[in-house]
Structures are given as C-alpha cells and as structure tokens.
Image (tube, rainbow, N blue to C red; front, side, top):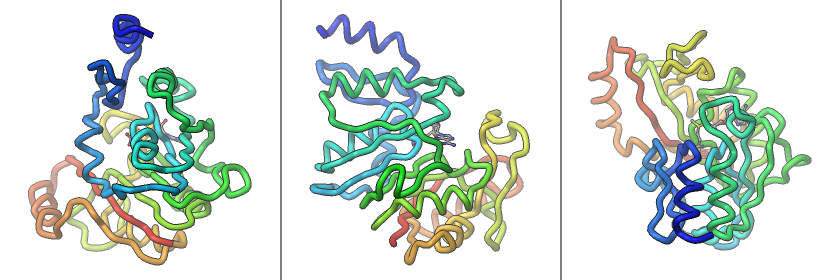
Length: 235
Ligand SMILES: C[S@@+](CC[C@H](N)C(=O)[O-])C[C@H]1O[C@@H](n2cnc3c(N)ncnc32)[C@H](O)[C@@H]1O
C-alpha cells in the first residue's frame, strides 16, 4: 500500500491507539499510547517470552510486546471487536498488516480464558479492562489461570480516600458516561483481589510513589473524579 492509500485507510477508522505505521503515519488514537506505555513498566526485553494481551482493541501493546522480542503474542478482545463500542477490529487488522506483524488474534471473552482455550503465557496484559468486568473477581481468576509469571494490570481506581479495600459500583453510566463500566476498586482492593486470585506478589508500579497517590486521594476527596494505576502481579 502506498502512503496515500495507507493514509486514506487510516482516516477511515476510529482509533483508540496511536500506532506508528511507518512512512511517517501515526494512527490518530484518542489515547496517547506511546506515552502511557511508560507507566506499565513493561520489561524492555521480552525476548523469547509469550505474551497475552487481553482486551487489546487496536493492539498497540501487542505490537509493542512483539517489538520488544516476544516470541509469541496473542491479541484478544470481544466487546470492541464485535462492534459493541465506538471502535472496531479494523484498526488492529490494518496495523497488523501494515507492520507485517506475526501477532495472533482470538476473539474471546475474558471469562472464557483458560489454559485449555488459549494456553498459558509468561506475561499477560490486562490493561483498561478490569473496571469493565461485571464479575471482577471471576475475571481475575480467569486471567490468573493463563498467567505463568507476570500479569500487568492497568485500571481505573476510585474511592481513594477510603482506607479499606473497597469497590465503587457504577450501576449505570456514572463512570465516563459509559455503561460498560462496572466497578472502580481502591488500590488496596486491586492488590488484595490479585492475591486472592492466586498471585503470590503484587506491586503497584504507577503512580510511582505513595505520596503522589495520597496527594491524588486528598485532591479528589468528595469529587467524582477517578484516577488510574498499574500493578504487577507475580505468580
Ligand atoms: C478501555 S479499553 C482498553 C484497551 C487496551 N487494552 C488499552 O489499554 O488501551 C477496554 C477493552 O476491553 C475490551 N473488553 C471489554 N469487555 C470485555 C470482555 N468481557 N472480554 C474481552 N474484552 C473485553 C473492550 O473491547 C476494549 O477493547
């Protein structure tokens, strides 16, 4: 595809992720994924590793794992790929083709993940998906079942001023006016849920300091604003 054709194809898609497709074209995603990836503390070298990207949307993080040397990457989604959100699967397909990527794909619901269906993976990315789960504990158990080493969880966090593990419930569209959001956990709830789901060690890697988190908690107290955090959970 020449540059003009590629640009036309890119313009015809609603992108969530900013993916560098080469020829000077970066997809116009609503999320600044090249900046956000820094928060994940994704290992710089994934040589020889297997990676599962759960709820991958346009696949930025799958392609990034491949770029960092992963020997097998499986990109999965259901909701968006089935056209149930403002996005689609088209971005993932165009990016994969254009990048000449070997990332594999599977349309599968989080709750259907199992070692029998997908195999198990050294590294599992569970980014921006937990708060979309109606059954968050069950979802984490499914994710744990296909993780052999490290699971990276990125999520909305809420109720930062509550000193106990707790989950805010969004019965309608309270979070971002999006009725596909269900629960916003406190950071301590995410940690406890991951341990309960079978991970031995859990570490919050973003925000990087307890002070920053406390500052956010104080500044958001009493407001409806939410914040996000990243956790590493080890088997
Ligand atoms: C906020 S987006 C995050 C996309 C990407 N992981 C990221 O961090 O940029 C949530 C993604 O989770 C997917 N998703 C929501 N519910 C799902 C489910 N039950 N099973 C699989 N994927 C789901 C959506 O389709 C969407 O791609």
